[in-house]
Image (cartoon, rainbow, N blue to C red; front, side):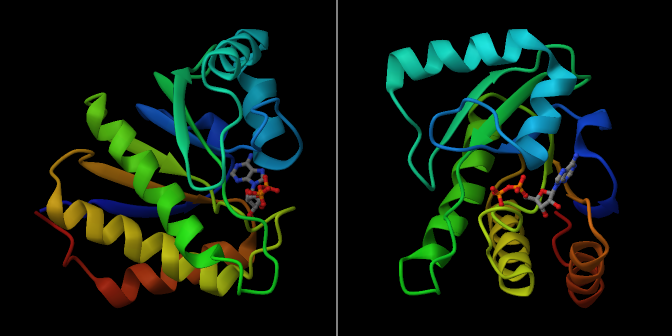
Length: 180
Ligand code: ADP
């Protein structure tokens, strides 16, 4: 049995997976951090695709997710999800972060994609404390995979040392119990 959850440290734009998830902002305009890196690597076609979504659906509120093509990336699609801005913990941040992961996975499932890579949503500019965010991300994905066969595999791609350590610890605690 192969573990369905994997953790690696690196640049998410380089991954050869079906779907890369972007930690977007509500305007879907591209920005700094992982969002900027994804837009730079994907090229201007991604910005155009985001503009079409924005025209059709308006802005993307926290917890929601939308899907576009992936421009020049190796991935087949990008799912843009908006995490919560950390405001101290009493502004529904945990449930919005959970929704961002769950809605992204549901979109991947709806489109039949089997491999999905997530960055550590909200843990950069949005300021979500990394340990708490990692717990939510890991357990939300784990729960979803327990109930669904698609996606078959999920990668947590950590850019920084602290997130890599946190996710690796969660993975080692869980062992292989998410295997179908
Ligand atoms: P947010 O606004 O949701 O906080 P950021 O892009 O500022 O989004 O940060 C989210 C996480 O993405 C941070 O942990 C940051 O270290 C990480 N990150 C930045 N660039 C990359 C990249 N190229 N690949 C993967 N993760 C990245």
